[in-house]
Image 1 (cartoon, helix red, strand yellow):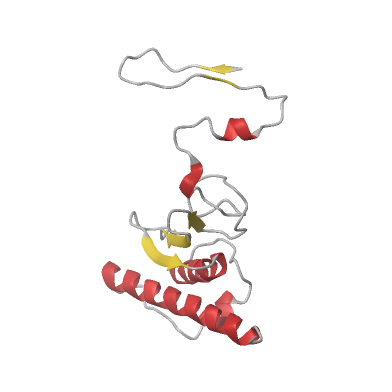
Image 2 (cartoon, rainbow, N blue to C red):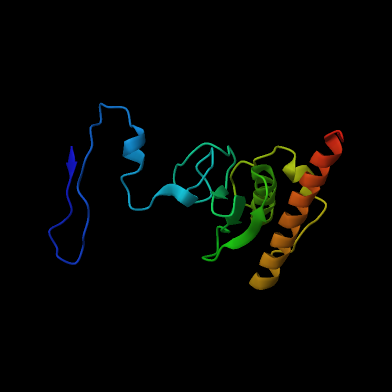
Length: 160
């Protein structure tokens, strides 16, 4: 099958041959101009971006290779703006932060960790707050959850 663009001069699309009976190869992944250096690394397909490598099986988490860090953000259902949840050292920390975003924005998507709602239910945030205040509180709680995860990992790892 061959995809063609309309013949209007103001749009420039690439045409591409696609064989639907053939398995995709590594060469097929690099044909777009939007190379996936910051592609979404989610297992569930959420959090923006589209497909990507499976180095982080977490929803809403992206790897920034130039920083060697993991970032996350969330867009509440009723808003056009996103809430930046932060930049983290590990994908697990970023996934914990994204779970905080899911909880407070009341999105109907699965959590990365099943125990996340249990940790957050005693820390309510009023949805009637102004947007800037609400976003700042969600980011603060996301950062605290990621730090709590880091501390729990350090306590669980025996000192050498």
